[in-house]
Image 1: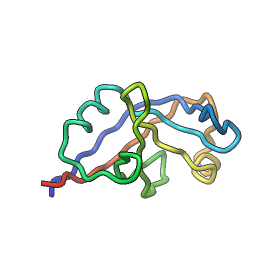
Image 2: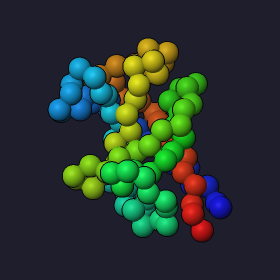
Image 3: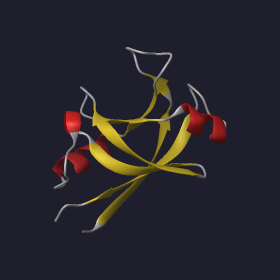
Image 4: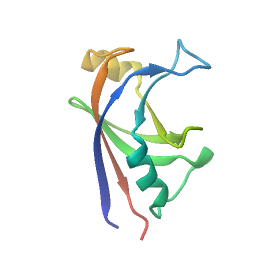
Length: 101
């Protein structure tokens, strides 16, 4: 298996359905398209397992497809607190996925 790593900037936004509970960073369209084309194992809701990084924080999670063709990465409150970021902030995010070859 060969790993794939991406880094990008994203503005933290609330999830429209549960604004008080979930905050997301969105994976840019060009990276999302590359992920869609890769032979990756999929989980529930067509999610992709990743290891995410934001600042000095690193955690295992999944990214979920959005209706606009991009993926959403949930940023837990504990991560936002540790990294001193919140809604509306632009953050530098990294994601790592494994190819299933």
